Image 1 (spheres, rainbow, N blue to C red):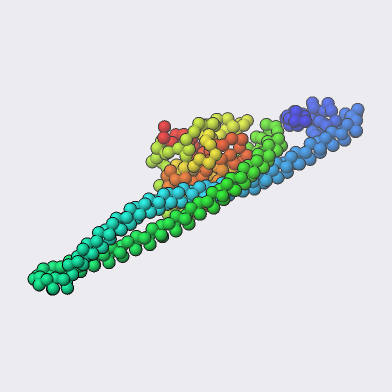
Image 2 (image 1 turned 135 degrees about the horizontal axis):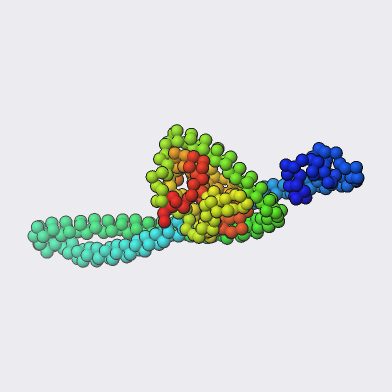
Length: 387
């Protein structure tokens, strides 16, 4: 069928091509007398059937892409919850460790205060044997009596202070114990939540894999795949236009200096093997506008330079993508992510985590799609990164 259509599109004269009913009909020339009307009708029906099939396939692909978007967005939400919970768990663990250390120090302090109180009580007891009454009865001199009185007052004040400090330490130990118990309970609850969310994530990923397999099976031919890639690129260009408008508005409020002074100095967004390099063949005449860097799912994706997030959403063909505007028309793109850690309007710093590596967009392996554009034109990202 494709060969026939190509043949029909050749710029030859109608009279030279009228060797069959379909060809003559398509070129506007009268069919030969011997042409069979039944054959013409059959070819027309075949053309109609092929067109209907193409239309049905496109609808099926669109439907599967919508399902993929829904699944990958759900996975992103679950993965983000897991990421946040793991961070919270790490903070709790650190806090618990600090509390335990403080508790041990307080217990040591309590032991010291108890020993001091024992000494004070013993000294006060011994001093009591030489009470003022005994001294008076013994005709002791008044200077010595004054000294004993002052000493007794100091002992009493020291004992009261030691008791107060011991009580305060005991109360603080009880407070630390309560905090420890509360945080350990939070940790237990958090671990149960993490286990549940990870189970949910695994189920969502299995469902996604089914959709990806169906999608791959639906886009069978090279021409269908090429058409899908071209459409994806058009979608990206459309979003770039929107992002540029947002960036222009942001620059008006807070100008940024762009990337021009940092060529060859930017840190890599992730470390890993380059699976597809810039300008290498992607499919047919299409070439990669960025690069694809292999890395395990869940590893952090870092912003290569400071800027403002102007796009953070799922984009067909690129999955969950973050676009950072660096000013002066310079933007960096990070696609295929498992989840996004930033939203539109967020300010980010160089080397700050903005996403987690994934395989969204229907990719068959975990990696990061990375691209740099200057005034909307792709440029080789490798030349901007440190060697």
